[in-house]
Image (cartoon, rainbow, N blue to C red):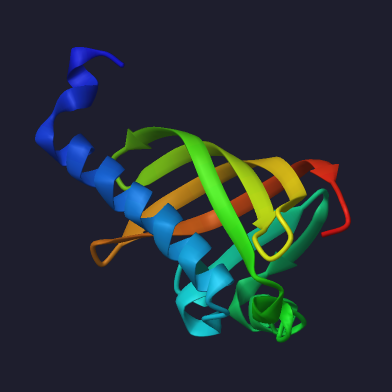
Length: 138
């Protein structure tokens, strides 16, 4: 990171994006559909291994299929977050680990590749791509 990356507005944006990542994972684990939808732009895209869902209506339908999911005690952990801010847009990358805390089994790992935008003072995902690299029965 260069010294020019450390200006106060960039630091504020990076904190805001880190908070976005946290809200996203908490919303999934708490089965908070509206909270999860609010992390995406209105026409946001969520792409898992090449299967994309676009817009809040489709995202809502996709999320609803996991109604019993919260009963499985899954926890999503995001780490090694890298963020590059350019005004009101940003690119992000992070590792994902999904753990079934009821049995201690690893459910999945992967990498998020994100395009983000800031509107009305809030950062949201324009395009969130998840590239999984391990799956296990949890």
